[in-house]
Length: 249
Ligand code: PGA
Image (cartoon, rainbow, N blue to C red; front, side, top):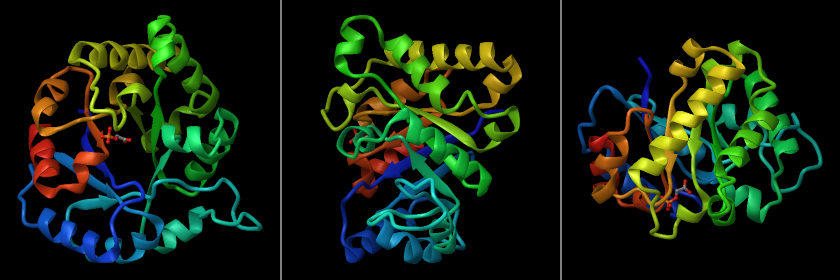
């Protein structure tokens, strides 16, 4: 059985006080026990949030991680720093990292290697731009992202990999991919994993969707057979909306 996952990517939002309030609200909900709930706060809050969530069933992820163990990389964060903060999951390859901070498939391949080596679980983002979809190149584009970053990994690494399909044109734009478009891509990703590895591995990987998920569209998206949950940006900053999305999964 694949795991259902709903992860909130808080991005560069929330002061410590705001995050504490958000957490307090989130902890007042009874989430379904079959859904794995994760929050991803900014770096400076990883330590205190993982401490606060120590005895609760909500996981914590960092929003990024460097591939080097340590060194002269001003502004970056290492695997051991993340683990030192009590965090064992990281998002990698978010389109905002790729677009604004020039992350490439090459550097992401190194980050994936490092995370696996350090036993850190990965929520790995893939997704096409609007132009790729308009020119019907979206499947090939996503396949190439997977081939260059994840398909180098041996079978054993996949226990630590969650894929997030996030079409760039749907992130933070209010424009959601339709449930059919989401299902079509998720099923394609699963087929691609099956061709590269095997069917049983493909069926065991959680593939979650991100891009303007809201309480009003979560049910229809999560009802798709190859959708195993969501990576939620804007709506994860509001406890009521986030809880409604978790409950829809
Ligand atoms: P959004 O962001 O829900 O605000 O579109 C999703 C994401 O960037 O992970």
